[in-house]
Image (cartoon, rainbow, N blue to C red; front, side, top):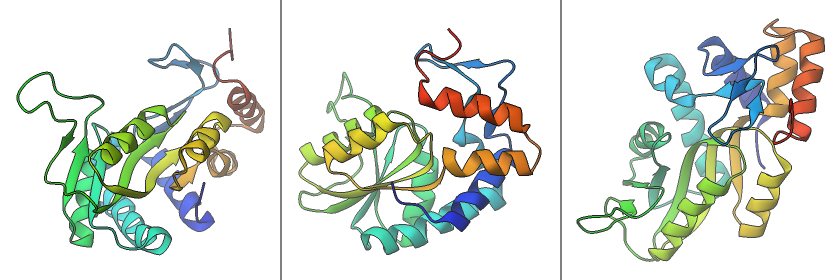
Length: 213
């Protein structure tokens, strides 16, 4: 997983400042998957803070071209990455489409919404990477539509080993603006958590599905 350290630290700090990332080892959150977690990340909040969303947009735009070259289309993964994906597409002067989790049950039965042509080079924009499963389903939908997926750019990754394996197996390059590895030392330095709580957060990442059970 590709990232720039300066960008990773700045992005992590901004996400903490606006409470897009919340750290609470003493009173864990419950994810939709049923996992207990001392961290919760909701990057939709970014859209409500103009300075932060502009920073994320600009870093995506700069690094997408640097890492993958300029694509023909930007594709956002519904629903969390639609907003930021549109901003990135606008910044790069590119068309935008978004990918549903599954085909619609009515009308044209679309999974990819927007105008897309076979053979076009696509970069997928995602808000958050956990296991990577839902993100890679979007990649498959774009490939089925006949496009060439050049890679994926995400705001934040939990750095789960299973995600690394999933992206490797799918042969998809992933660029993230920030990640768990850069978040924790910054959170300690800025006093969002204590060093003892950092240890708890490190333990969680080793086995998130069974932690605190």
